[in-house]
Image (cartoon, rainbow, N blue to C red):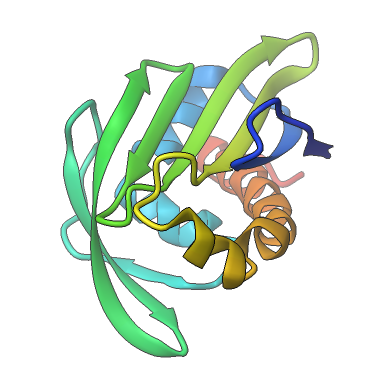
Length: 153
């Protein structure tokens, strides 16, 4: 579900996942989990597997047309509720988790409000092209949570 924001420099997608915030956060804070859940198919591997926390610096192997590596830093962190990271461009990928009756409402946000070049991000079309990939990421996140739990749903 695409979510509206008061911030004109954010796009968000939400999904209720049948899992606890702790189970979901365990995937989001595991750099190897990023490879499993990436709906854009651009994350190809982790440079050094690690568990993320506030201030963690981590690197990923990427491919968008050509292969490259990128380093990011965790800039927002509240255990089992919120994690966000950014790289040198300063735009953020944020995941907010909220317990609900049938699991956890997970909202993924692409936030380019602090980006070094907001106009470049807009000209590249990312605000419009990211929501479908984000929808797929949340679907894959659910599948990974269930896989780690041992469910075959």
